[in-house]
Image (cartoon, rainbow, N blue to C red; front, side, top):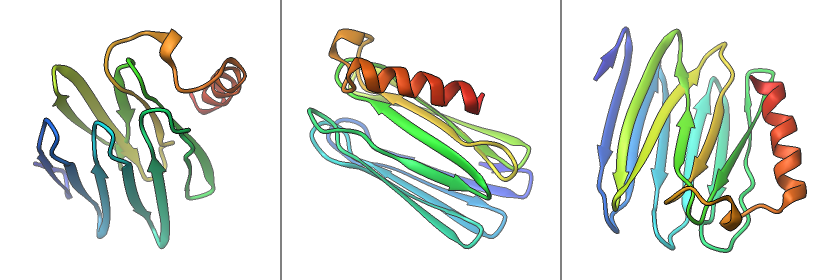
Length: 150
């Protein structure tokens, strides 16, 4: 899929297979590799000359991810357990959207890069906040941080 001069390539394997998407922003390469189930979720993003690496562990592991795009600080929080998975990204002024099905769940991914803020919120499986991977204090902090990004 070509979005303007931005080349977006996405290869997706569902089930226990990895989900890999490679996105080119101008001459920059944004690569994201996601392992579902009990495997770790690792995404490596190049924005300009900066390398942003986000490592996420699902299950009972904590989720921490801070991404810097230009001078903007972007915090990415992923909810595991029975939550849905949604991530938003912009490439230049174009909107790149990919919809991924992992098992029977729907995973939606949209990417905004360049001068746009990069916001990513991921949840896995069905919506059930009682199984959220973050405690209430962390959720309050997240909500405050996300309001600042929007």
